[in-house]
Image (cartoon, rainbow, N blue to C red):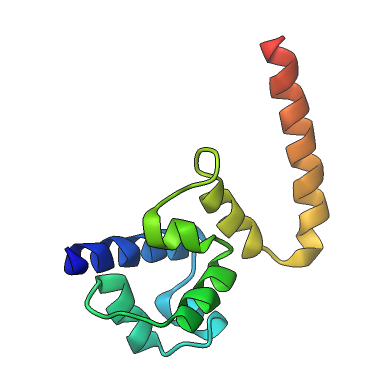
Length: 111
């Protein structure tokens, strides 16, 4: 059971990393972890501390609930959140404007 749990956690971390387009080395640097240690976590062959979990959550822009239990916020917002957290802050106003326009358009179509 413990091994399967670790494999699932590692898979979710890898999924988020890949959604952001990060290499293992890039995520390790952003989370202040060794790349080899991150590799063992992603493969499910190692465990980690609460401190490492917090670092990974911040670097990936996802909640600990998602990493540990796979609980996503309303659909797959964790992936969207991860993509946005990896974006250069100077582009966020443009993304926000585009998202508002898109939401307005799809809401109008539903009416």
